[in-house]
Image (cartoon, rainbow, N blue to C red):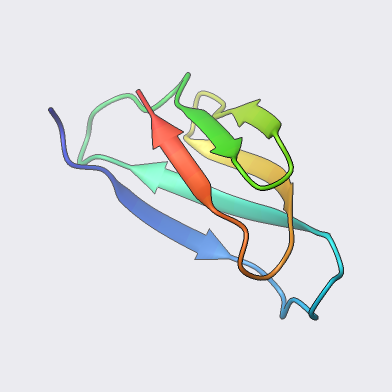
Length: 68
């Protein structure tokens, strides 16, 4: 399995508030399109675009899972 590096760029999250989290998944020079991002806490899902970028709703302490 390839190792993925996750870079999350987000503003501060206040307790109990949901914010849009934007991040980029990178794997060297490999394509990272189509990586599933799941917030297990609120059951929201999204998929990375051709550049590995994703946006998902999340609150502090939510659990995000990334699956290729």
